[in-house]
Length: 259
Image (cartoon, rainbow, N blue to C red; front, side, top):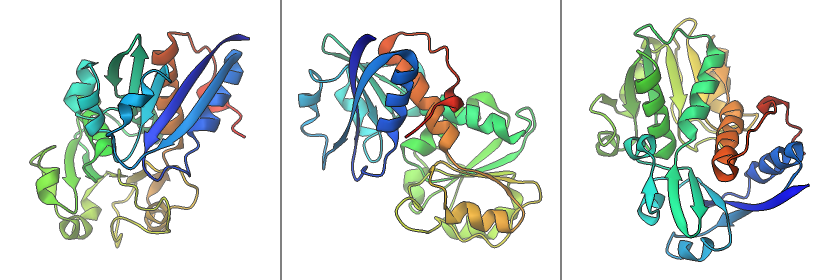
């Protein structure tokens, strides 16, 4: 058994998370002892107490953007995204990374969409997850990207190509790709947007990884192809684990046995 590691997930209301099981499964596959803790905190005010206890942290809602202010540096992609989901801690030095965008691209590859075409994409939400999706689409595809958010001014921090929820609901049939980057649907069977019509052969992705998601059920019922965020979760976890440990993860990400 190789040396053990201590990692954690910082967020709020995260009791549902499967990250502990996922990272422990990665450790088991590599013969490494992993302790992974859910760190559910009301604010980031006391985050400094974590630096000496962990070699690495994941970050989730609602702290992906704010965590950048608590780190000593960030890699270039993370700075452009403006949100981090991974912190590497070495000798007290905190480096912020974003592995969400890498996980999203690997999920998007499953759709069969042609990245070289000027397809129309809609992102619902403007938080940390949406920022990673936006960066991935703008750097790895030729898609035209629109952001839809309840608060238009918040969406404009990301791009000026924005829509209100009502406008998006009226124009859903124009989009080849629609991504739910909000947490709506995690704790209740709800959709962030009313889906009345979809474009033929369009793809709807929910970054949440629960099995029963109204956003996906409603769009699939109208003929869209659908994917949840499970692959993204696994792939971003692998990238985080690699950053924390500097190990070559020579195992199949999707072959892990999650208990």
